[in-house]
Every structure is written in structure tokens, then in C-alpha cells.
Image 1 (cartoon, rainbow, N blue to C red):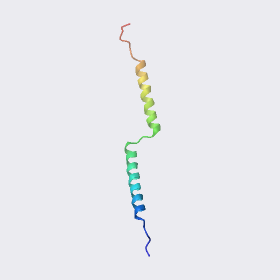
Image 2: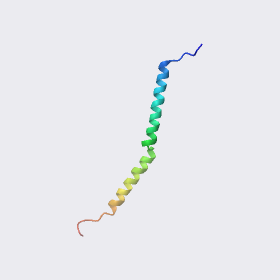
Image 3: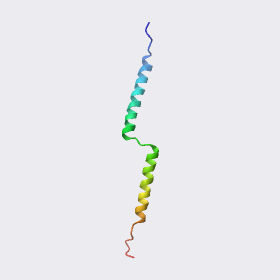
Image 4: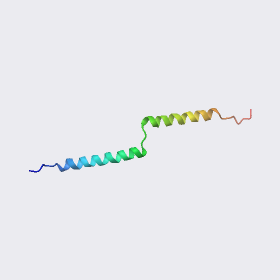
Length: 61
């Protein structure tokens, strides 16, 4: 006898696998880790502070 297959379970597992594969592709394409995002943001804030510290007054004094 052949093995009985639950078609609903098979369909759901296939859908999950497809979504996971698509997510992996998107993660590799667009994703950055939380640590990378925080590092970039901290570097940007440091650069802004550095530039603001070097501004000259326009008063002429």
C-alpha cells in the first residue's frame, strides 16, 4: 500500500518553505543586522557633532 499524504499539511509546508526562501533572499539583498544599523547611526551622529563643533560664527567677531 502507498503512504497516505495529508495535502493540507503538504501545501502549508510548501508555502512556509517558499516564504522562508524569499525572506532569505531579501535578507541577503537588503538586510543589515541590528548592530550594523546602530553602528551606522552612531557614526552619523558623531560626524554631525564633529561638523557642528567646527562651524564658525557669522557675527564677524
